[in-house]
Image 1: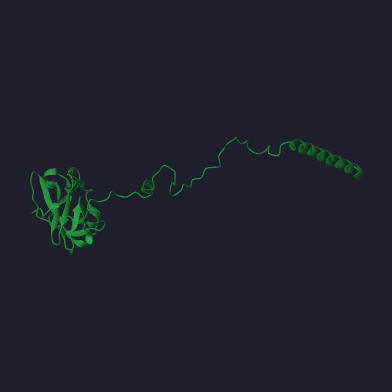
Image 2 (image 1 turned 120 degrees about the horizontal axis):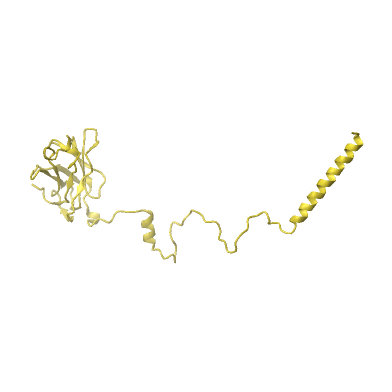
Length: 219
C-alpha cells in the first residue's frame, strides 16, 4: 500500500472518531447529572456515629440520667461520708465456733482511728496462698439485711465467715497463708495470717459464706 493510501485511510478514521465523540456529547447535553445515583426528595444528610455528650435543652432526658448512663456508679452507701476506710481499721479472725458440720469464724474489724466511722454491709474476703493467689471460689453472701454499725475509736464489728467442714463434705482442700479482708465500699484489703488449717477450695460444698457486720467481736 502506498503512503498516499495510508494517509487517506488515517484521515478517514480520525474523521469518524470525531463524529462519534460529537454524537455522544450531544446526547449528554440535556442532563449533566445522569451518571449520579438518583436522590430521593427529603433524604436526610448522612448519619454519623458521634453522639452529643449531653442531650441539651428540650431533649426530654434529664442531665443527671444522661451522666449516669455514661459513667455507671455504685449506689450511695447509707453510711455516707462517715464510712470507715481501710487505713483506719485493723483486721483479725476470731476463734472458730463449729457446729452442724460447719466451721464458723468471726472476721473482726476494729476502728484504730481517732474519729467515729461506720461499716455497712459485707467484707470482701479471699483465702490466698503465700504468693497471693486466691484459693477456692468467691464467697457467697447471705440474704440477711445489713445494718449500719457505728464504731467509736477502739470499737469493733464482726462479720460471720463459714464453710462446710471438708472432712464431712469431702471437698478438696488447701491450707491458706492468709485471709484478705476488704472493708465495705473500699478497694484496699487488710491481710490476716490464717492459722486455722485447711479450708475447702474445690468440689461440692467448697463455697465460703458470709453474713454482714454486727457490733462487737463475735466472741
